[in-house]
Length: 216
Ligand SMILES: [Zn+2]
Image (cartoon, rainbow, N blue to C red; front, side, top):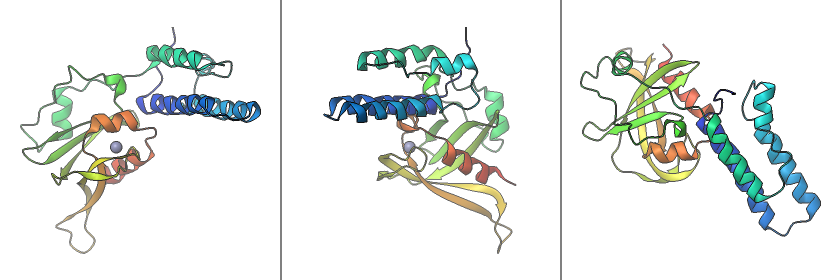
């Protein structure tokens, strides 16, 4: 059996392409144009996971699918190939955030880790957000401060319109003019990371943010 190889954001991306195909099927567009829509979306699906084996490529080859039902079934079958977010131990957490002595992992018993690109939770008592992600095969984490009042805007990570909060994170880079301070980065990010993980289709911004925050 093929190993799990589809990450949450890649699965969301595939679902988005399939939703586009299904939507186009409902429109009264000429068959030739519709065939092109199918081809373009199928091609995007085939290329959304880098460095796939021939077997994995076969799993994401939707080019023979004709009907909405077939696409729905194909999406369902992908469940067996979805990769969960790695399990995080309390020790790993302590190592990532040595200064936050009382920090505990959130209760993940009701969380489907297959639906997680980045693991994040808010500590409303301290107005802190913790964000964990596997960057270059290594678990990394950042701590952000946030303003408690969410507002409707575009999230920097998932690019969707949602209830976002302004998060700031201190980088490890010292301020140019005042070396006593560290440079901060501010971002509008979904207040609810569960929603963000449902919508995220790419990690370019998230990875840039993390690299930028963690660079010494
Ligand atoms: Zn978001």
